[in-house]
Image 1: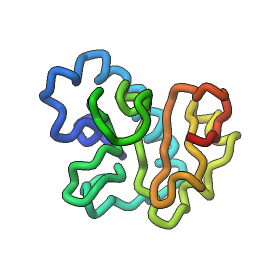
Image 2: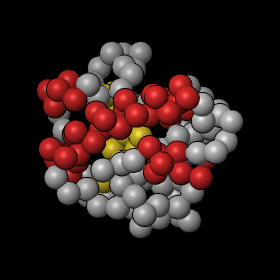
Image 3: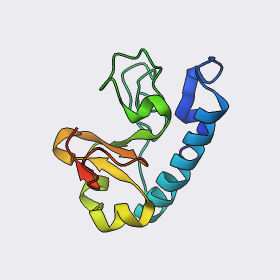
Length: 135
């Protein structure tokens, strides 16, 4: 289970972590955690100590990203607390997920080919509207 505290990490006290961002993350994580519970055991990333994928040293941007973060796209859903990268080193979560399950949980994901080692999940549709999309 991913907590709001884990999602924001060391950024939790910053002014960019507004009540709206916390509300967005809470809604996202409710959906993601239902999915992860049904999937089964998701290991912790050794770099973050959580189920959120991240960079060495545990500071990665697999959870919330600040507006000026250089990680990912400028319009990344991580910057509005609507996306999370779940640690998936062997691709088991991505292999288990399909568009039917994503619809059930109210989630969208980046294509597994583009996210080797993690599963990107978001609760806002991409421009294409597809449940599985290329970033």
